[in-house]
Length: 153
Image 1: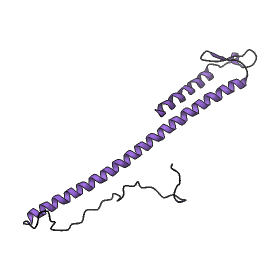
Image 2 (image 1 turned 135 degrees about the vertical axis):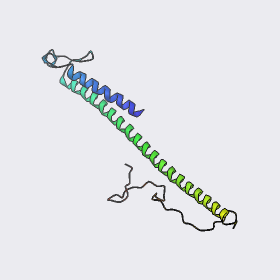
Image 3 (image 1 turned 90 degrees about the vertical axis):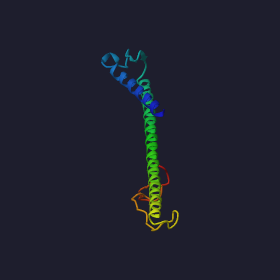
Image 4 (image 1 turned 120 degrees about the vertical axis):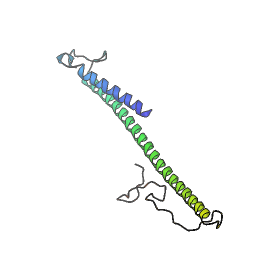
């Protein structure tokens, strides 16, 4: 929502600015004596200071629109990064569950083939296969030059 509102403001400011520039060219549009500046039928008469103030307002609206666009883009990037982290975590958890299930199936098959040494008792103590996945669920970060960063990016 913020992204769309920012795009609307930014596009509106750009359209107003371009219409003002291209609609008032030539010697008949000077702001001096008898000159007139118009945009979308609104005539600005007076000094160049009032025209400059109008330009500042249009620029401020464009800046506000650009800020909203950047905030919306940052939020979407943050959400996608969090979704990727959660996907990695769920894949690691699924891999652990699959590995444990395979170990239990192997133990059951070994117990059946071993002649009934005990229901579900493992005949050999086989270590689990190691993976390259990190042990913790915390996201991996790079070290900073000056220690821990106090504020979020």
